[in-house]
Amino acid sequence: MLGDVLLISDKHREAAADILQKVLEIRKPKIIVAISGESGSGKSELSHVLAKEMRAQGIPTKIMHIDNYYRIHPLERKEWRMNKGIENVVGYDEYDWDTIYRNILEFREGKQATMPCVDLVTEQVDSLITDFKAIDALVIDGLYAIKTEGTDLNVFIELTYHETKKAQVVRGKEPQNEYRARVLEQEHKMVQALRPRAHLIITKEYQVVPA
Image (cartoon, rainbow, N blue to C red; front, side):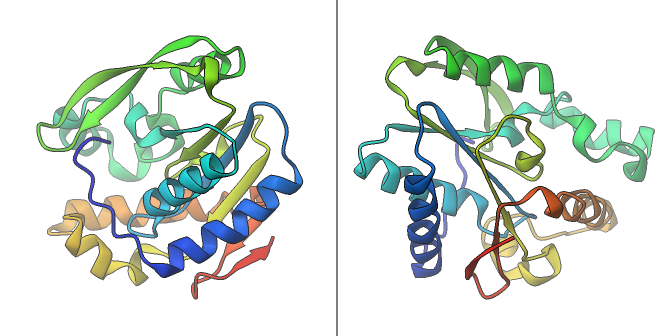
């Protein structure tokens, strides 16, 4: 996402180094790593560091932020959720999975792809054109990233939104009202349900362990 704030620290670098070792063990053409976690858990920071470390190992890597793939426009999402019922609609089905899988297929086939990209300043959805011809790896990050089928390595961050309030405040994501609090609670339920799909777990102390 354009305009996102990254708070990279040593814990992200250390976790990325551990994940990199696993990536190198299973290294293959067009490898896909998925990273899921709740708001403020460090998905974007970890993905950024991991992608740079993979590139340093000779694996050109692209990050796919699937929170760019919501079906409902950012400026319309709150009203849509409120009208439909937050507990009824917040979750996996908010994503445009057809476009996600089309872009993944374009990555696998080394084609040029048009990908959505949310500008957090304007809250508009821009289009990003990416040539996957020279890209050997894809890091998918997002709340429900490890739900994506066909990934090679799934990473799940155990921190919940209750434990990441400081990061949410700095990044402007701290719940300011009942609406945001209800959304975070529903996302919490949906994200935690994905834990069994993980190959690696990042504990609340940010240690990488096998699932």
